[in-house]
Length: 75
Image: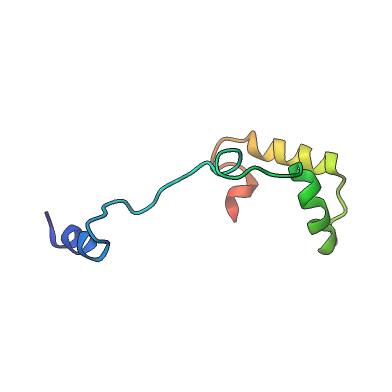
């Protein structure tokens, strides 16, 4: 074990993982409203006037792209 690995294990109490990825939506979180109903009023606060149908259509299009090619991945 190199010095870097030894140090990482020491500061994290022997834990060797740096991250854990969890699919939260539908697994850990159960939304009470459809996503478009939640995001529409938030967008309106910032001047975005999309219908719920348009929000849903844009999300479907964005998430249909291969990972890394969606405009959402630029954030």
